[in-house]
Length: 335
Image 1 (cartoon, rainbow, N blue to C red):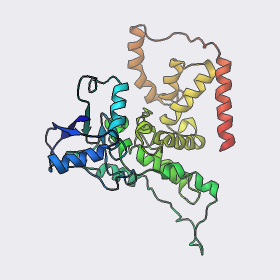
Image 2: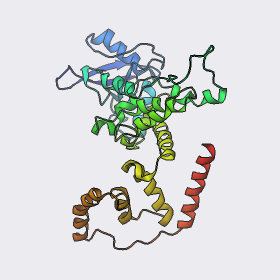
Image 3: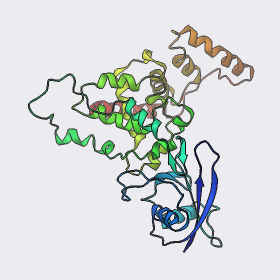
Image 4: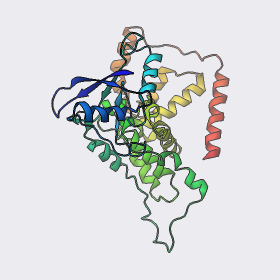
């Protein structure tokens, strides 16, 4: 069958252009197979990365029809089927199906589908992604782990550093300080590693401002595009839980935000917005500067009739409270 490939091409510091290539392909051909044919048969100037061709190295990550994926893993048939289910204008019974290929996001383009991954690697290095045994004496034998201890590292150990999650990260797009889901997934691997002796310092670093776990917007894009099912958001959530069990609500606004939210939902079934701002930003009336910062917004809300003067608990509050307490007890028991 014929497929029209639309490739976003770009030189460094120049505007992208769309170039089309028509290929006769089989449904089982991977996107990487098709790019190879384009380069070998039609346009030798096309630039992209590749290596193993077997979903191991992560080199061929790119955006395929708007989502970051591995070109060696996705095939023509599955992409056309996905477009058909989405009722995309790129596919109809009367036209040649189209597949659009673009470079990864959140990283500057070097040429065509090749991006500069310096920020990706620098942010990984920022979380110190290696086991620290500095506090131990050098042993006569290696540091051994039980099968149970090692199993905690399996999921994060599957990461192949392809950059798909980083490319789709909304938090990274608006906050250049955020280290990214790939780095924090690796960070949890270090937190969970029984051989590591620097857990407390790590958690302090990951708790810092919005460059660590609190910068995550929980959009789930990282989980949805990960080709290895590492689930970066799940790992970020685990780090947050480790931090929350060690911190008091007075230790920082990010900590209060999470704890106050849970407290208010337990209390009334949903969030009492009046208390939420005062407790989180005003630190339970202890932070005068925070309280003053709320005044302009509060006055505007009152003027427009948007400030709730009373609060009514939701129906089923007791049931909500019981569910939250059951989850908390389960987490504590596992911890």
